[in-house]
Image 1 (spheres, rainbow, N blue to C red):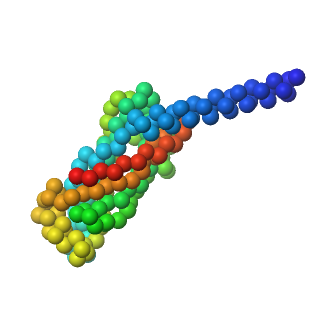
Image 2: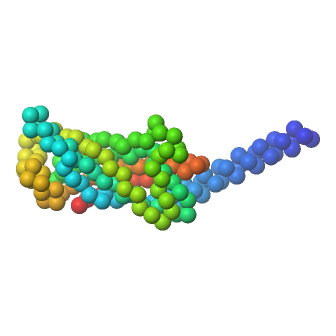
Amino acid sequence: MVVVGAAVVMVAIFMAAWYRTVIEEGEISEAVKIRIQGVSIKDVDFNNNKMTITINFGITNNTDKIVTVSKIDYEVSVDGVTLGKNFLSYEDVALVGRPPIFTRQTTTLSSDFTFNYSPSIDSSWNKLIRGDVNGVDWSIKGTAEIETAWSIIPVQFDEQF
């Protein structure tokens, strides 16, 4: 009887944790939003024809739980031409050391993205060299891994501005 009772308790605990994860996943994927708050030019390397931009991700948490971000994978395009892919990762940082996204607040995380000059982006490159970041059409899309104490939920975003 003791073994059967222990097994029933273990199954109940497992089912409760699983149910909580399923409920949490739906809530987080609907209530956490990622927006691009801005793009700025950080550095231009004229010798190697490279440019580094800083992308500011605004992560808004509209839940009653404090969450964090473990990773953001994203792809950057300018004026319809894909510049490449990059990621911002906190996976090697302990959960308590990652940037918290508090309830009903927005947290900004910045990521540097470096790309090379190519003839296909000549017009856009020249605008960016002059500092006209708003004179080009940006497209940044990707997936952020939002982490709670119980689960990791992928939240997708696709921003054009």
